[in-house]
Amino acid sequence: MRYHREGAGSPLVLIHGIGSRWQVWKPVLPALAAQRDVIAVDLPGFGSSPPDGGPGDVPHLADRVTELLDALGVTRPAVGGSSLGGAVALELGRRGVARVVTAFAPVGFYGSSGARWCQGTVGAARSGGALLGPVLPALLRTRAGRAALCGLFYARPLRLTPDEAVDDARALVAAPGFAGARRELGAWRFAGAGAVPTTIAWGTRDLVLPYGQARRARRLLPEARHVRLKGCGHLPFGDDPAVCARLLLETA
Image: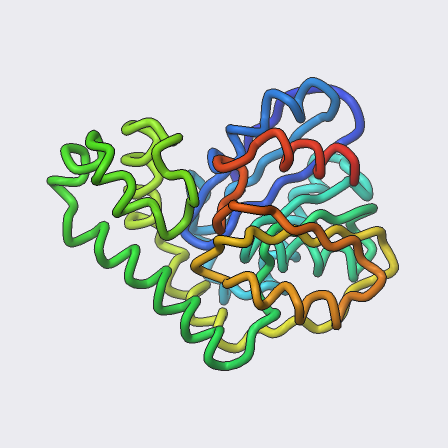
């Protein structure tokens, strides 16, 4: 597994969602690295990490992150995760691998229709990116193009630079781990958390995992801190980096 590491202090591990890569955390990295030893991973089959032949489900990905931490000599870090990575973070907390957990819109708090919606939206985004391939850079240089093509994931897509939008779209299309992880999303449901301090944060304008799922998270995790990210989308780090960084630092 590849990873990006910067900063100094107690370790904070960051785990991206399906189709993404460590760079999704870049809007919050300066604030985090000023106080923490930040390790932002590329899950197997995403970003620059090659696929490992595993199923791409939450337990397997938690195993791989645990192996990486063991190899780095990092013990019981704070862990933050987004979407699929949020579920991996919760699983690491359940196992006692993580000391504290911050999960942004974690998967697994949906019913069957919510799972199908999630699978469908991320699948459509990938298919659309592949179809548009050669014209993506030209489209994403325009404000209208970024609003249309990135608005599924961001409530404020115009904060993305054209280069960031192109690189994110290409990473989504090229990810060899996407199909397996997408398939496993249909079967994954939240299975309980450990006794570690946990924060669940959810954007009110999330179109991939709609905010209504936060109510189920509140019922299943009554002891956790639940935070409403007003006006934020599925990837709130670009929409409101200051608030997201504060949540991660408070928890860590």
